[in-house]
Image (cartoon, rainbow, N blue to C red; front, top):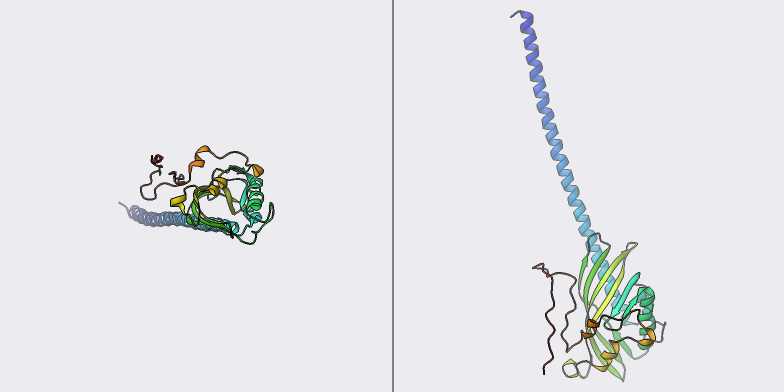
Length: 268
């Protein structure tokens, strides 16, 4: 091989080595870039999941505040304030008293009906002297649906009601509510209550069973009529009858749907 050929071969070999090194470095850089890109994608997904969880926690807190505020407003006969808690497309059903549709229905139920029967008159907020109407909200279980625009909640109340010098009674029952977020604000979509019992304070539920005031409260008022009647089965929710208001959520451990046991027949 001539000197020129040998020199050419050496140059070719040198170029090959340089090209191999360059390719190796490029491959390493590409690998690092690929790993970095994968890590950025993973962190972005984790951030999005964290933001969703944080939003859900904030939504749950807002719904809890809404529901507890409803109880506080009912306590003092703040009927117009109660009506403001409802969406335009909403419904209220308290036991077997019927279904009231929309904010107008909520107004007819609370501001008109409750105002006339319990408060200072139809359309007037506040309670008369000597009237007690405590309505606390307990045991809240709230679940926000995917998308964070609708939700469901289960609550219990143990109300104390009295007209001084006349009558005092307990009322206990379960709410299963639906909520909707409108313009970033949570409101009631459905407020549904199943009364478990009404009983006069000095007699108690063991002796009295269904008190007459319970029958009256758990039926439609013809003067402030509902938009439609309550489902027939909802009139059977009161002690001593056995009734389990349906759960909106599954068993939190097994994940199974919670099914109500069969109705218990009265003892002969």
